[in-house]
Amino acid sequence: MAEKKKRFIGYDYKEVTAEPVRLSLLLDGYESFGWEVIENAGTTAGNGIYNPGVPAKQQGKQTVRLRRERKIINKAELTRLQSNFEACISEIDALERAKTTRPTLTSITVGIIGTAFMAGSVFAVTAQPPLIILSIILAVPGFFGWLVPYFLYREMAAKQADKIRPLIEKKYDEIYELCEKGSGLLH
Image (cartoon, one colour):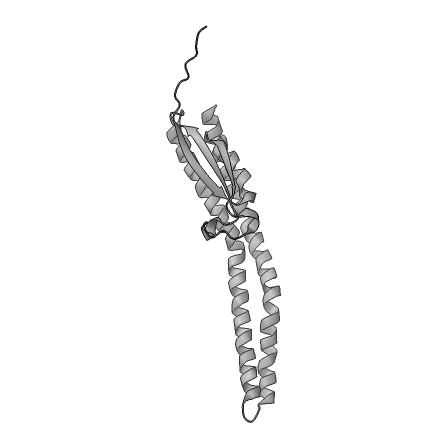
């Protein structure tokens, strides 16, 4: 019997940590650049429980280990496309955060201003003699400052999402083009 010799294959290894909702996109993308999944390490913090051994940025995320042949054809071009892919993913994450950043800051500011008016109202009513009229005048904008932020946030977040959605779609289109090019280089 002729014995087959197993040839040595060197691999590059990569560990990817991402939120579960983003993991499928990342795995599909990395496969387009020659990577294959060797292990799904699971969630970094089991069942949403805080794990002090895991950095806060990685809490609740999943880790996957990948490998790719070191001597893969078109490695330089695949690496360049992969870098662009990773940059697009980072830009999408930044755009997703931008949907709520400005509405959150605006709502918090309005709430703090409302609290300042309410504090003025309390100081006016506890003064000697009590300044009831001034207290009422300061309490009205204070209550509005406490009620308005919720509605302000919802409206601003919806507008911001409508404004950012086309930018995110462009980035997804760019990702799909990069993956097509990478897949074309592999086959």
